[in-house]
Length: 332
Image (tube, rainbow, N blue to C red; front, side, top):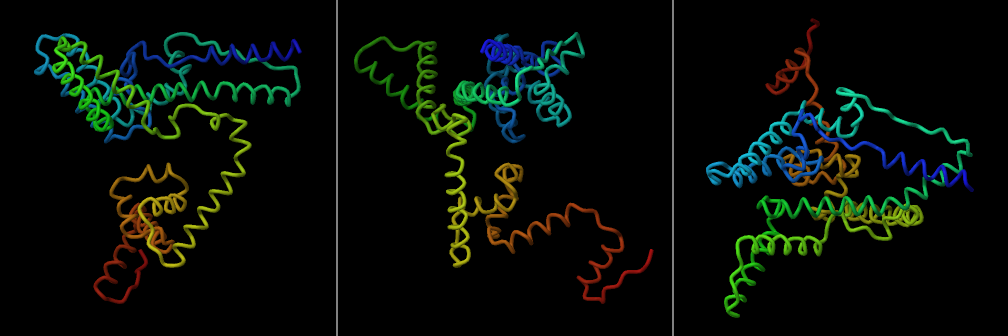
């Protein structure tokens, strides 16, 4: 029993000692990192990066904040973050060092990575790891929830598009509170009080909103053991949903946008593949009814042809066919 307790303590210590990436030598944006500087997550698209940069650069522009050194420093940091994240090579390096902080530290000093070889059975170790993961998972989910809500509040305060809905509602609440104070002949809110009230209101609105499952407040269903227990049921529901959509397609019914996207994601291999497509490609898939397999295959074939370089002889053959001439290829 002592051995198991000691192993659990060592695993906990090793996990806690895992280094967090900090750009202390300011090779990218310094501390905080480039994503935090723009109020974004590491999976942000270039369009989201540009939108966040435009919004923040307008807010902290020197012309709007004359003589404000703090605003000037923020403006410069935002510009640097945009420069790094819109440069594919720079962003690739930043993401690599974020995931592998030991590589970053090894460039400027030493990094010691301790490993422990347990003498207990492999089954015992796996069981302890599973229990540990089940206990830690809610804490990690809560951490993601906090980061996401903070980013949303920050986006709303900066009037970024991602937080526009929350900002609009919060502004209405703040305006209503100001009216109540006037009617009650109370002291008017100062600028600082108004900012604090706005931030508090945004935090409440974000907390009440329906967040994506990935960043939702942790619940019992997030527990590893519960997920394993419910996995057969989720697979059954997924299969039933797939069968339902196939029946609709077979009967000639027109799918709505959400249903069509769901089917196309299945053809592509998952939601990540869909998200990787450009907006125009997504629109084309939906508008050309690519939830029908034959339409999807045609789209995929066209895309592959456009991506692959053609030989000169093949290009000539295609031109001849378009002109109506008999197609033949001369040996080169």
